[in-house]
Length: 62
Image 1 (tube, helix red, strand yellow):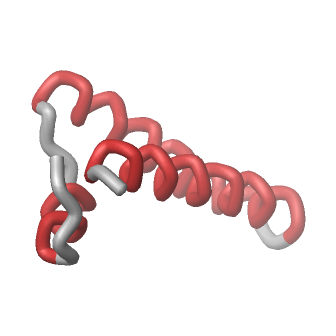
Image 2 (tube, rainbow, N blue to C red):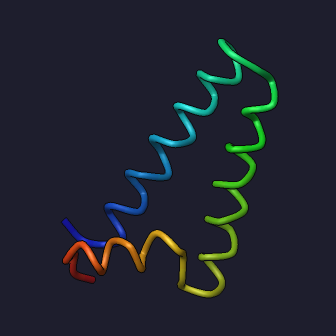
């Protein structure tokens, strides 16, 4: 698996989980969704995301 695929997988899972938590637990979990969206937005411009560093340390390739 590549870093980009892992990043998209992680972002999608976190968004889906945060939407579920927003509905079932607290409306404040919407902030997690907003954080992930903002992180994806900035990574589109900078080509860097904190998760990419973690994935590289795990041995994933570009």
